[in-house]
Image (cartoon, rainbow, N blue to C red; front, side, top):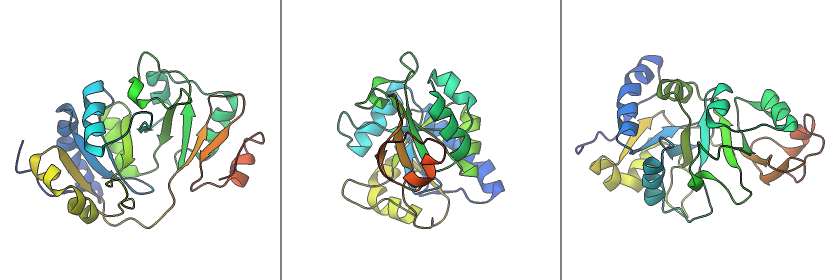
Length: 223
């Protein structure tokens, strides 16, 4: 697969509908997508081992720093065999879909080890981006996600930034870009570890600890 287009429009409903098939084909080939989210542009794809390995190589990700998973419904948590403690259920009910990533226990037989963090859990977010929800639903499973930028470069908020940084990879067909326009600058998702007895903030982000404590009073850390 060479001569890949620079980007596929992924903005209006007709564009999103047209983009689903080539995006699914890219994932079937165990290759990587760049796509807009509710925060910044992400890189990701299917969650099988070969697809995850392709993303690790492209991103140059060190071991022990996993990618998170994007879902489009709570039913996908059961498919991943991930478990929600009661406080995680309450946080998800309040803030999903949205910019909250929950690190959850479970998934040993379903999620590759490369997606498991040092605390032993798997980071998951129910994305609020309507186009990405549609793609994930069509895929029928979670998708991996990491920021679509080279190391040391700020997260990308437009497809042009991705093309500037990953031009050779795009030309080879290893990366397919879904162009959702220029995103408004926003903080990343707040990441909360839910593998212990109480929720713990491990990355501050879009949702403050004060707001999170309205649902989870025992929250540890500040966001």
